[in-house]
Image 1 (cartoon, rainbow, N blue to C red):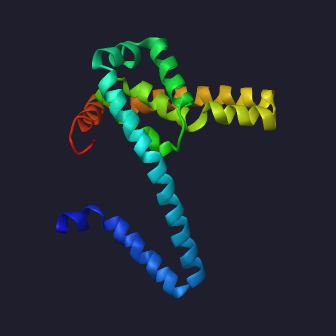
Image 2: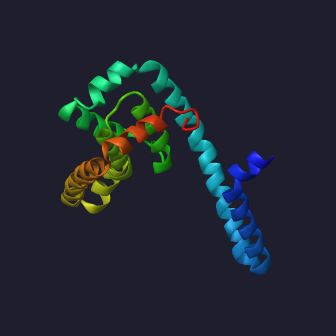
Length: 180
């Protein structure tokens, strides 16, 4: 019981705060509970397919293949694949992190994982088509170009900011049972 309370203490704290708000300001409290319910339903619809995808990725793609195409020595090919994986993805950003964890576990470079997360968050293909249709192709191409440059700069800077020991800790975390 103590383990459950400790693990979910933030959830219980937020639930308590919601209850206090609901008592003090019923309209705002009901709105907060409604939004929480909507978010939980969305997560329950998104998370199961993500875990199925993770299982398939873990079983179908062996470590050597992942290292060859997105590992430290993959070069431009790895960057392109990371951009493609992130851009073709569907779903909210929180779904990218378990996939990034599997990529690290399989030997992808930290740089390419940062590229993947950046692409997931800013260069999704459906978003680009919507942008092009509503804001115009010149705007979309300008934003896409600037996003790609920004992602590359951020990924490079973040990777270089981590010393070798910190990078090892990131990889080690993805091998522990708690991380998965």
